[in-house]
Image (cartoon, rainbow, N blue to C red; front, side, top):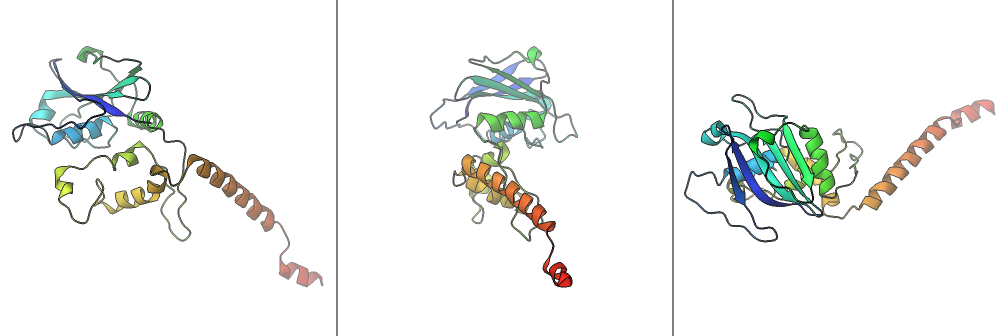
Amino acid sequence: MSIQILNIVLYGHDGQQRALALKPGSVNVITGASKTGKSALIDIVDYCFGSNECRVPEGIIRKAVDWFAVRLQLNSGQVVIARRCPPPGSASSEECFVEVANTVALPQASALHQTTNTEGLENLLTGWCGIADNIHETPPGQRRAPASANFRHALLLCFQPQDEIIRRNQLFHRCSDNFVAQALKDVLPYLLGAVTDDFVKKRRSFGGFGKSSRTANAGLPNSQHFAAMA
């Protein structure tokens, strides 16, 4: 499964749109003068892909933009995802617009409205990129909750802003955060294909069998009970 970006789009409060076209299946190099918004592109895409925070810096872009959007090419069909720019003082917005068809044109600003929220958007993206139901069971003796690989985890392998490229002790996006780094470590075997969907299903079945066995064993008399009967 693959997802490729065809356009990154900004919709202004006046209804106008600015679209950056990208060529799928190729390396796209974006150049321009300093302070013209190149560094914000990753943050715009990340926000459209369900980030819980809009990391586009406060300033001219946030003031001028009403909706951020991307147009994507899927294995079969295309999709437009738009997300409303958060109002001043807010970290994000739950207003997400999704349109899916064989071919999707960029919608007019007047057509944008909420069709889902970030949770629904993440579920759609996770399915589109081929991630099935999965779970990483926490090793015995560790207290963190089990983790399920999803689209947001996969993005950590795709983004690398310029301030991360120069860091000697960090390889993946946002892994300076220990919580993010541990989550990626937990789900990385699945994302790399070392743990297959078939393995996940078998382990889930084995886990249910083990639970049933422990329940059955708990009902059996223990050795002290037999000793008392002797």
